[in-house]
Image (cartoon, rainbow, N blue to C red; front, side):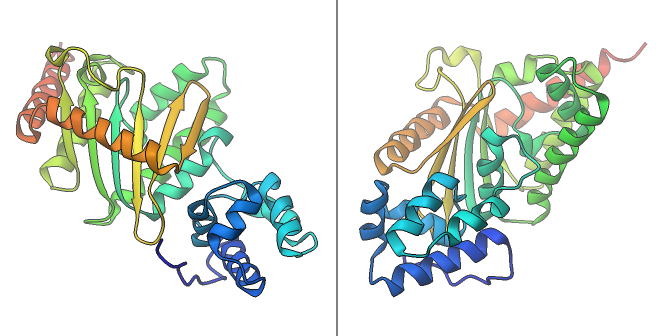
Length: 279
């Protein structure tokens, strides 16, 4: 297991807690595995807390205070690191993706958040909650657009996305919105910023028909996989689960169109959407 990363405690509340956890653990003479056993979690989970790639929740904060004799330090401070602009079920995944060096995602129903345009994100969020006030939708869309800034860096993280053909053909927000959204994805691929493949309907049954998945790799922490459903989401670090889902992703890429053919299909459908908008 890689050693814990040296953190700047002033960087964020999560970084501060990670640095303090590492200090308290080492002071107690415990390895990450030793401490993990006391909390009934893996040593890699402790490493992720120390690296700031996992959020400390009250349940684990209480157990850490008990195991390390830190009185109520972690319980008092974990609430600050838990504040987020994102829904609770997605907050940790959204926050941890900024630390990833590589993200591999299968999207069965919609364009992934990191690749969405503002208009597409608005249509998706309005569909999620048709009765939400406009100000709430504005906040959600802004949160989504903040996430897309992750791609402002020219090379990092590596983003490799497999889009089900249904993503391209499900008219979300109207044809003009779809034309813009697909052109945006194609533009990122044309610039070499992302790798995108389309899993065509002709591929038939496949290993990930039950839903989406996102694999995230980190420089100084074990990989994670994120599962998501309606109003729910879960991060998983179990090595066997991560390995199984990585194999699933590899099968999807093998069944998908090549990046070149995928780009051609995306651009052709974008033109179809745009052309049909003309009077």
